[in-house]
Image (cartoon, rainbow, N blue to C red; front, top):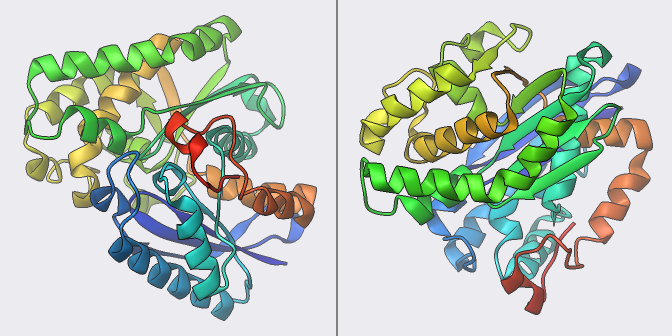
Length: 336
């Protein structure tokens, strides 16, 4: 069985095609298309027509690539940048009508659950009680669990792109006052979830997402070219020093630092501040940088629970969820 998963994020459309024989998704092809939706859409605003055109084109190309690799009808989902748009129902409808791909959105809590499943399978049962942090463009997801799926999840509006737009719209580099205000915001939003993680006392902590992977490289982890099986660790003390390095540079110059890519340079500082504050509040001194996250979680649920699980998610994507931000509750919206 060959599975394709398409992930529409704030920066790119990513496609993973994997063989699923034997219960483990083994990648045979990966590809990405630069989209940079977060640069065209402010949090809470509608996605403009030109951005929708770009999205439709990228999804069509990704779908064609999946078909050429023998993975038809990829499991396709969009993250916070589409989920948070007031016109998301129209965006999803345009994609489905013009490409045939049943793109849906997933509630933040489901994304956290899927990332946890991916991390659990990668780390193995020996990792014991597991805590997870995942920073995307629009949200910061927190999860904890002792089994296959988490016992506790939280999805908070603390994504690196969202925080950059809110706190650093002009300052480059931002002032110390803005950095302090950002930390206060993260502490306020995270206090309840962080208290739960501290109370649970996890044996193992993991961080996932491109933001954490790049921060891990900045803090001394092995580069990606060494492959996924090299153990990578992110230390809170190193991340604290990385915040200082990033804060001292304009966004354009951060891409010269190890691991920081040009498309993510502007939001790298906000991601580092959110990540460091989250690790401090949760009491995590070190965390493994895990290469498996949401996309792998989707594949694993499909393998382990059958296609009916994804069918239910897709069919429910036209219904608003309890995790939707207030402005979207009055709109005709789509969600997973």
